[in-house]
Structures are given as structure tokens and as C-alpha cells.
Amino acid sequence: MLKTSRGRRRMADVLTYAVLLTMTFFCLAPIVWMFLTSLKTEADIVTSQMQYLPARITFENYRAIWTQSNFPVLITNSLVVTTITVVICVLTGTLAAYAFSRLSFKGREKLMLGYLLVRMFPAVMVIIPLFVMMRTVGLVDSRFGLALAYTSFLLPLFVWMLKGFFDAAPKELESAARIDGSTRLGAMVRIILPLARNGLVASSVFIAIAAWNEFIFALMLTTGQGSRTWPVGLQLMVGEFQLPWGVLAAGGILSILPVVILFAIVQRAMVQGLTAGAVKG
Amino acid sequence: MKSVLHRGPLAKLGDLSETRYWVYLLLFPSLILLLLVVAYPTLYGFVISVREMRLTRPGLNGWVGTKHYVAMLSDRVFWISLKNTAIWVTAAIALEVAMGFVAAVALNRNVPGTKLFGVLILLPYFLPNVVAGHMWALLLDPRLGVINDILVKVRILSSYKAWFADPATAMAATIVVEAWHGFPFFALLFLAGLKGIPEDLYKAAAVDGAGPIRQFRLITVPMLRTVITAAVILRVISLVNSPDLLLVLTGGGPGNATQVLSLYAFQTAYREFNFGYAGALAVVMFVILMVFATLYIRLTRVSKD
Image (tube, rainbow over all chains, first blue to last red; front, side, top):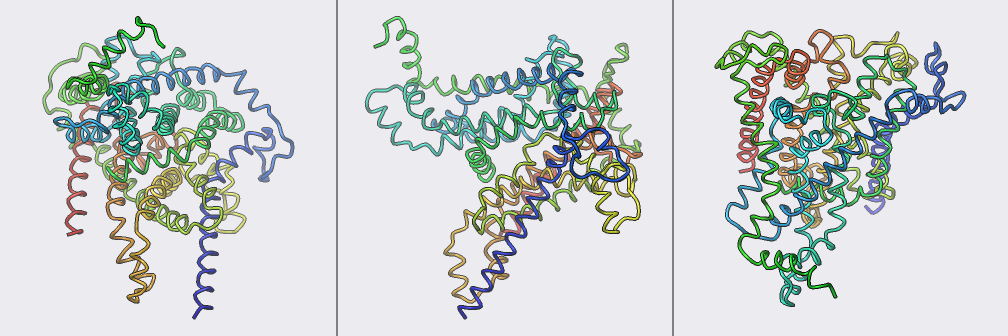
């Protein structure tokens, strides 16, 4: 009896590792292949006999994308747009998340549902009117305009995620501060915000990644060098100049580098926030 | 000690936070912003869909009523896109749910190393569609694709295949790419759901003599139902709405083999500047999503009772 159950457990463990290894391979292999391609010379990429590992490691592709295209400008634009988006979301979203988490008021449930429903609107349905509106006020091809457009889907997400973190912060400390004579504002700034610091960082990083990666809004709302972000620029380069695979791979690796680093640093808190929001909603 | 001058406005704000206006003050900024960038554009979107609006021909302007909606009925590409949207979303989500579930069950066994596996499996979900698209275009390239090379070496294929250029395989190939990108989302949510099931339930079931399969059917699946419903709805919405991946991979081609509604609407606006018709397409998508979400939630509720 004992023997078979132990045997069964070992079998299950082996199966578990087999599944996890296969899935990890499936997830990582494309990224690894792109990385290898970015280190290959053109002669090693375009071959009649597939060259799996680079015969000679070269950084020429990285040099090419950085110095022979407007990639640095694109990256700068993306950085600016991402920063503005995060600043807007943190400034306005933190207040709303706090209100939803700590204060009771009329229409609270309905308003929260409203913030959730915003995600149902097709991006295309919002993009077209936004384009017309922004053209009227001169915000097309502006980094601030694009960041504003991003808040349309990232602000509700931010509020929901952060509300989850606020909910998890113990209420007792806040009550104690209030009894000691602190105002609501004081309790929020001195007690709740420091307690939910990790959540605030995780939620900010999550929307930063989303803003950094966004493509469709950027394609529609940016028309020139002034505000074009890297996903649009990279895509246009592929279309216009028949970008060599090695250079494209180098561009891809450079642009996902910040994402991978940020993700590695805060993935634990981010995962927590994502699942809490979605499971409840 | 802070100076009196500094304390002035802050103290005032502190006093204000004790009044009943405080909550409205907190909500005001985000609410105004969302009204401005979501609510107003959405309403305006409905208006655009019943107007003629082409940026290339500013003279053409004005109310046209249901013209665009009527035109849609006889638009061959619209019907193809509608059908493709259904196929694409259904197949991709079925695949993602299955893979996500297997991954979640494996991760939930907490074998040594699980944390690292969890992080690595989650990574694709956070990568940009543009890079994901080109990454897979490179893997499946008809001349240089490593997947072609492997398949030929193990003799599944006799020669390299142009996966995205062949109408017979284009859709399937894009679904695999989408599954790669999207399954971690389900793994993440399912894992959270699995962790929420009390261990005692399984112990009690085991005492009552239920084997692993019955435990799975009678405990795991019912306990996960809310999570599955929520995850599927969120993913359907995001898949129906986002044309990114198909725009990068195929542009809707070959022919219209991978054309979907979101991409069709986007191209109508972006390439032809026919905002009126594109707006009408977006409205139809919105209505379809609303109907789907309502029906789906109702059906899953009914089956629970």
C-alpha cells in the first residue's frame, strides 16, 4: 500500500517536471532564438544549411539599429509617453483606489463596476473618436496626447489593482492614527500609502509595461518623429526598409530588455495584484 | 517642526478630508479623465457611425443614418471577418485554457524549483505583441525558419512551408502564436484559483473513497468555475478588441484568410480614412461583446444552480 502510493507520487513528480520543462521550453525558446539571431552575422542567418549557434558572435546588429536608424529617438519617445502615463495614473488613480477601498458612499458599487466595464469598449471604437478629438485640439502626434489616450484603458486597471492592495492593508493602524488625532488625509499619507508601497510599485510597473508595449493607439495617434514610439517605429522599419533579420532581432531584444528587468524585479507583487483583481472581479 | 506657513494649506486640506466632500474630491480627477477619454469618445463613436466622415474627402460630411450598417450586410469582408473572429477567438482561448490549466496544476504541486518555472512561464504574457509577432515570423519563416528546419529533419515536412502565406495554415499558425502569448494569463489565474481550494476538501473526498479523477470532477472544476468564467470573459474581450498580433503577422491575409473584425475596422480607419464605416464596425463589435458577456455570465450561473 505504502509502496504503491509512494511510487504513484514519484510518477506524478516526474510528470510534473516533464510538463513544467516542456512549457518553459515552449515559452523561452522563441526568445532565446531571437537573442541568438541578434548575435549572428548576416551570413550565418541567411544560409542554405541552418546554423543553430552563431559561428562568430557579433554586436554589429545592435550597433546598426542604434546608430543607423532613429531607434534612440523612438526609445526616448516611448520612455516619455510611459512616464507621463504612469504619473497621470498614479496621481489620479491612487486617490480613486483609496476612496473605493476605504470610504463608503452612495453609488460606490455602481461606480466600481463602471471602472471595470470601461475595459469592454473595443479599442477601435475609442481610437477613432479620440483621433478626431485630438486632431481638433492639436494633440495628434503629441506624446502627452498619446499618454492621455493610454489612460483610457490603463487608469481603470490601475485603480482596480491598487484597490486590491489597499484592501489588504490592515484597517486597525489607520483607526489608531485617527484616534490619535490624525485627519483622514494624514492617515492616508502616513499610514496607508507606506503600507501599500509594494502594491503601488507593482501596479505602476504593470501599467508602465503595458504603455511601453502598446501598439495600436500609437500607430493611429502618432504621425511623425515627434511622438512615434518604438513598436510603431520598428514595425514601419520592417515594412519600409526590409529590415535584415539580425537587426530586427537586435531591436526586439533591446526593446524587451526593460520589460524583462522590471518584470523580474516586481513579478511577485504584480502577480498578486493581477490575480486578486481578476479573481474578485 | 514644520513652519506655520507650510502647515497652513495642508491643515486646511486635512480639515477638508473630514468633511463629506472628501470622497468626491478623491474621485473627481480620475472620473473627469475617464469621462473625457472613454465616455465621451464612446458616445461620439456612436455618432460617427451614423455619419459620413472621410478625412481624405472633407466635403463629404453629414448624417447618413443607418447607411453604414446596411452596407455592412452586403459587405463580403465583414462576414468573413465575423466568421474568422469567432474561429480565431474560440480556438485560441480553448488552447489557452487547456494549456493554462495544465500549467497551473503542475505549478500547484509545488515541486522544488516551482517559483523559477512560474516566472519563466509567465514571461511571454508581458512581452509586446510587435516583438512576439516578429519573433514567430522568424521562427516560421519560409526560407530561414528554424521550425521548418526541425520539421523537415524529423521528416514531418518534406520541404519548408510558408505558414503565414498559405490560406490553409495561416489561421492555425496565428492561433499558435496567440496561444504562446496568452496562455500564461490563464495559468496565472487558474493557479490563484487552485490555491484557494481548501486542502481539507480533497482529504475528505479521499476518505470517502473518491479517486483523483472524481476529486477533479467534483471538487476542482466546480471550485474553479468563477475563476474560469472571469478569465474567459476578460480574454475574449481583449482578443476581440486587439488587432495587434494579426496586423504584425499577416495583415489579415492571405486574401482575407485571417481578417478579423478589429483589424478590418482599424484598417478601414487607418488606411482608407473611412471613419464612418469603421465606427459602425466598432459599434457592431461592441454590441456583440455585450451580448456575449451577458449570455455567458447567465449560462455559467444557470449551470451552477
